[in-house]
Image 1 (cartoon, rainbow, N blue to C red):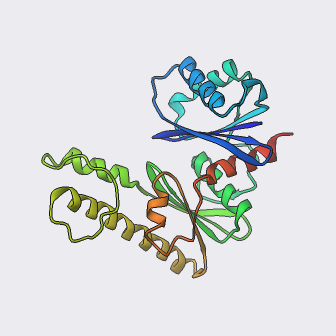
Image 2: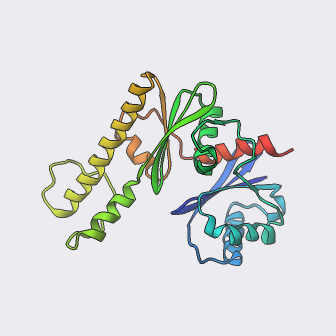
Length: 256
C-alpha cells in the first residue's frame, strides 16, 4: 500500500492507495509546533481507522509547501512507518514540463495537481485549487506548465474582513440564497461569495481569451472547490482527490 500526503498551509491531507484504488483519506490541521511523535500518533490513528497496519505501507510520498514542519513530519514517517519518504521537489520525475521563469520556485502542490489533471483527464486544461490561496494553472496539450495565477483564497478574505473591520464578526463561508442582503451576516456572506465567484469566472474567461482556447477544460479541487463549482457553469469538473491522484502518478514514475 502507498501513503500519499499533501502538506498545505491550512491542512495536511493523507490518503492510502491499495494498488490503484484510494481506500481512505484523512485531514488534520497544519500546526507548526507538533512534534514527530504527535504526527506519528495521528498517522497511526488514521491507519487504524482505515484498518491498515503500518507494516502494510510499502512507500510514502509527500508534497509540501510548509518547510517549517518537514523535519518533524518526515521524522515521524521514519520512526512510526519505518520508511524514507519520497519528497516531491527538484529532480523528481513528474511527467510535467515546467517552463516558468523560475521552475524551482513552483510549489510542489501545483505540480502534483497538474500531474493529476494531465494523466487523468487531458492537457489544454486549467486547474484551480481552492486552498489557503487560490491557484490557477494552465497545462498545455503536450504537458507543459507555463502560466499560473495566484490569488487570495476566500478564507483569507473572510478573515481580513473580521480582523480589520472592528464591528464585523467572524462568519461561516456559505452561499446566501440571494445577494439582496438585509443584515450584517448575510451581507458579508453575499459580498464574499458572489464577489469571489465573480473573480473566479473572470480569471477563467481571461485565460480562455488570451490563450485563444474557448474549449479549455476547467478542473477544480481543494476545500471550497465543491461549493464554488456548484455555482458556476465555467468549471467543468470538481475532483476532490486530484492531489492524491497526482501523488500516485508521480510515485509510479519514481518507484524504481
